[in-house]
Length: 346
Image (cartoon, rainbow, N blue to C red; front, side):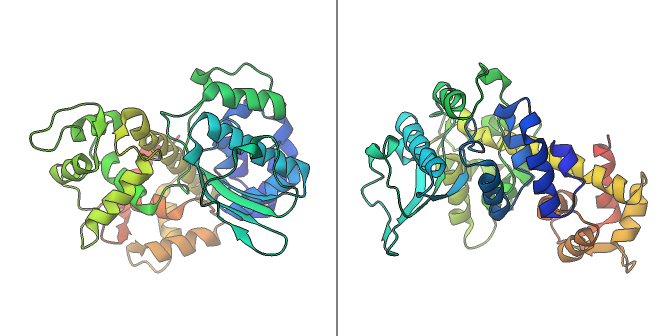
């Protein structure tokens, strides 16, 4: 399904194909593998309205999902019930940026938290917006599976080992992607990166958890310049807060491995990009380069790269692809840098 959607350059066509074949997906627990191809919130919301909020609810991987629900509809209220019930069994603070827009236009930002009673009985009017986050340490897979069986028409006894845990490249802040790009070029695995940073502060020992200080010192010892500048500390702290969604003040190995999920999605995205180039320009990547570098300057800026690809119908994450190719971080890519894509050919 994911590969098929890559052949449609228009959003409407991708959505139509997805809806047409949705009922034929056999591993619905790994639906996120396909849904991350819809990078815009508007696309995802359209699919939810067409398929039904409860049908398209991300039962197994609700992490980073955003919801815009109309409480006058039963299936929308059901989603609110499920979100509150899920948060009650994982961590109630997992529901973020919640707001209830009442019919008179007034807003409730829930300064005291969402009422637990909403798990069974939510309001029947107004609109409810929120997003859901969850640390891997807090994940209640059994309860997620029970929701999928009860409301998602997914009775299969899915084992956690069958899950393809995934984080879309459009989900984290850009600073997290900057860290990912740096680590990919330095380590063989995210586990190795964690071990290199854990205990990296002078006088500290490895304890399988990272503090903000350890992250700062570890990146410094690895020679990371991605965050260099007057706001370096603030940017690294932003990365740390993303990796510590539970807010405990430490990042466990399991939480850190969200970067491994991003790495796998990153790798898959690059391979799909190469397939797109071969589909659009033929097997020889030099032909693709010459078509993209239409002024023959020998270099492409990110803007030129983006504009050239959009003309050809590419709808993937251009910034991520460009960042991989621009290994000198000078804001341009040459043919030599572009040639690294040879390693990603099928």
